[in-house]
Amino acid sequence: MFLNRLIGYMSNDVAIDLGTANTLVYVKGRGIVLNEPSVVAVERASRKVLAVGHEAKDMLGRTPQAIEAVRPLSDGVIADFEMTEELIRRFVTKVQKHRFLVHPRIIVSVPSGITEVEKRAVRDSTERAGARDVFLAAEPIAAAIGVGLPVGRPTGNMVIDIGGGTTEIAVMTLNDIVHDTSLRVAGDKMDEAIQQYVKRAYNLLIGERTAERIKMEIGSAFPLEEELELEIKGRDLIGGIPKTIKVTSVEIREALQEPISAIVEGLKQSLEQTPPELASDIVDRGIVMTGGGSLLRGLDVLLREATNLPITVAEDALLCVVLGCGKILDDMETYASVLMRSNS
Image (tube, rainbow, N blue to C red):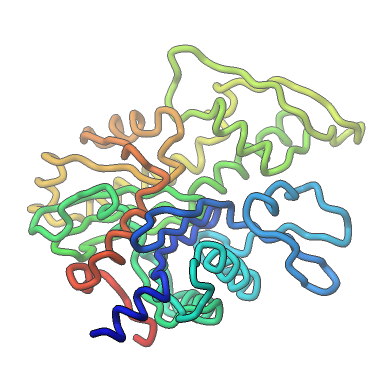
C-alpha cells in the first residue's frame, strides 16, 4: 500500500488524446496541462528532432531544404513510428514534475476502427516513450465520458467525434460500443478539399495552414444568414508569382461538399444499424457532436436536417476526448471495461 502511494507520488499518470492535428495531455490531479499541434520538425540528414508542437507547426511550409516539418500521425493512426515516439516522449517529459523517477501509466485515445497492428504501434511507441503501462481507450467512448453522458447505464448514447484525421460515429450503452462507424474523413480532408478547390478555380496554390484558416474563418456546411468573404494569398500556378484573391463562404461550402456528404452518409448508415431500443433512446436524448471538426459553422444544422434528430455540439468540443480519458484515469476501477491493456 505504501509502495503504491510512493509510486503514485513519484510518477504523474497521464492521459493523452493523440490526435492527427493536436495532442492534448491530462495529468492526474492537475487536469489538462498541454494542448499542442501534433507536428515535429526534423533535420533531414540526421533525423535529429529540432522542435515539436507549436514551434514545429510554425515551420510548416516555411522550412529550408535541410529541415522538414512533419505530421507523424495520419488519418488518426501512426504514419511515422520514430517521430510519434519522440512527440509523446517530449510532451510527457514536459508535463512530468518528477522527470521519470518512476515511469507513468499512460492512457491513449485511439480511433474505434483501429486495426490490431495499429493498436500495437500506439502501445509500442508509448512504451518506448517512457510509459510503465499503456492502456488504450476508443475515442468515441472517451468523448462521451468527457461530455458527461451516462455511458454506464442501459440507455443508448450517440456521439459524433470529428477530429483531424477521423470521424467517429458510435452508439454506446453499459460502458461499451454497440455499433461504430470510423471514417477516415475529417478536418484534414476538409483542408485538402479547400486547397484543391482554390487550385482548380483560381490556379492558386495555397498551403495547409492557409486552407485551415479559410475553413475556420469562413467555412460552413449550411447557408449562412450573412455570407462571408476572406482575402487569401498564395502562388499563382500560371505566372509563378505570389497573388492575392478573395474567396467567399459560398465557394468554400461548395468545396467542402464531398467530405461533409461522407460524414452525413456515415451518420445515416450508423443510425440504420442501431438496435431499435437504443434508437428510441437516441430520438429522446439526441446526438452529441465533439471534436474540432464539429465546430464548422452549420454542420449541426445540416445533420439535424438530414436525420430529423436533436443534435447538439458539446460545450468544450475540442477537449471532450482528453477530459474523458482523464476521468477514466481518475477512476480506473469504474471504467476498467472500456480499456484495452498494453499486453492484451
